[in-house]
Image 1 (spheres, rainbow, N blue to C red):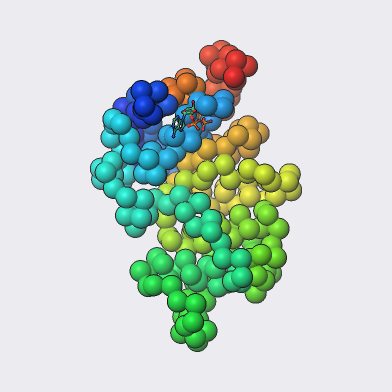
Image 2 (image 1 turned 90 degrees about the vertical axis):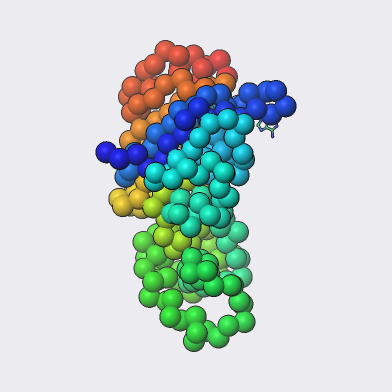
Length: 246
Ligand code: ADP
């Protein structure tokens, strides 16, 4: 299986404090890969490094064979690696359909213009409806984003992310703050989205991680403790100790 994203020797120091230390990570094409670990393990820092919201102190990041270590997040998005919260500013006063259209316009490099006529925007409608369908929001097509439940807003966020046509999606705690029924809905959605895309996610909800992930990387104190499927990593004594000790 081919490697989509590979980090080698990834290290981040904050004024001498090593938050991420010599991390080697390989994400395989078509998998759901989870990054887990106790609080302070370095997950967020690692995620920010991979998505280039932070610059690594040392190390190299390669996406689809291209060295992206020095690239900007916007340029990485154009290559097909998109972080979900990059567009989490869902426009509350726009409808579901309009929100997805905006993402499509961005994908095509058009500047966003609220005042364009509905007619000139409607060229995007079929495509936009497809993404809205994919995330299960068809019945809310003409609802304003502000009227949606929290879980549905996240689904809309994912639809707008999909409209950027990513090959790889990075999800930062997709289940944070969600009620159980939304957790189930978003889990099903992630599984569906993953059919023809690669996903890397940081997630605290371990039953979601167990349910969705093909591969799990466990971080603690900035280093990789264990890697493998859920059955393997959840039995590893060093992982159990790291969680208990946290
Ligand atoms: P996690 O997401 O696993 O909870 P983080 O990546 O947020 O862990 O943090 C890892 C460690 O790095 C923590 O000890 C945190 O205090 C430290 N850290 C994170 N960001 C900064 C920063 N900007 N400046 C200094 N220390 C930081």
